[in-house]
Length: 365
Ligand code: MN3
Image (cartoon, rainbow, N blue to C red; front, side, top):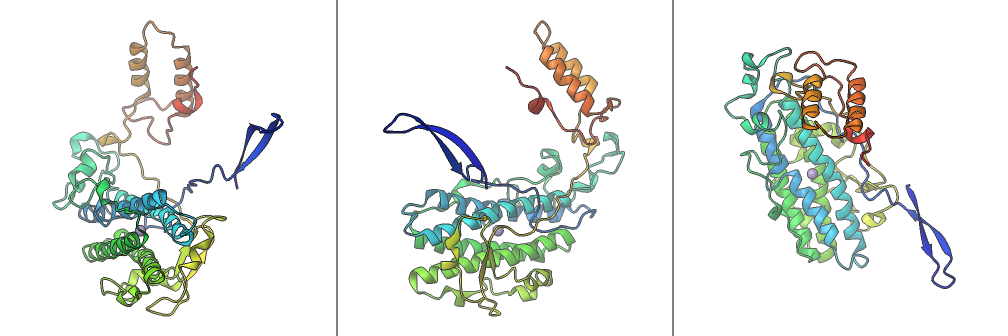
């Protein structure tokens, strides 16, 4: 748990009081890992990359689930009176953040390897990504990577967020949203044979199924109506999807993560009972699931990702700064040169392992 110190004046004596503020740095905590491991070193598949975009920026994509729950939790009034529901929505928000990252990682893997090693621009290195059913914007504009957009490359929209302030209506909306999200995952699953896209769908169908169930249970607690009898919506069980088996075997279809060690303790007042399909007891787990390493995809020099020539950069900066005091700039350039180990030859010599250091190591006073 993080701590921070602050000084305040005592209201009677005027003397300074040292305050210890708990949890000041746990408002959002980020862990540099993916929620599920994805196959690496796979063939690019622009059509699959386009289809998976719907799970990113479509109306029922992960950007929508994240932003709906995030803003509902930010906006919730009378929070203490409805604390178990607040805790539920807030903790699912954290998981959805990781789902957005997972969808981005999947799209990036599906767009990786399109450019052959040692290709030059005249080799037409992006031919592989220029497939008939792909989205050109991914590689023409976005560096062979995911867009905040749907399968048609239409941008995700803020008005996909529904935050009415009415708890029953918001839970009903969230149930509908998770049902639409489930439909999208099933259809993306059915549209591809690519192992990365299939695994993503298997994982998200399992976890999205939990969120769909959580909102069904929340509605049941609030209204007495047994929404669970409608599950699964759409009427295709995870048991028909082989890629969910590994996750179901670990009970990931019946667990909600708190995504916090100390907070959101009252989720289990809402999320309890048994799974409607197989009777597995529903449970809430402290913290977060075990993580997995993100693929560190190689730069793609022929398309300029990253395209960085140290010598050229120095020359441009010197020209721009002519007549100014650039002693601090020299420090920055020296630091950059050290970092890149002198690989300044060729148009992309500094690409491998290069990390920009100007912002982090040079203080401009
Ligand atoms: Mn999700």
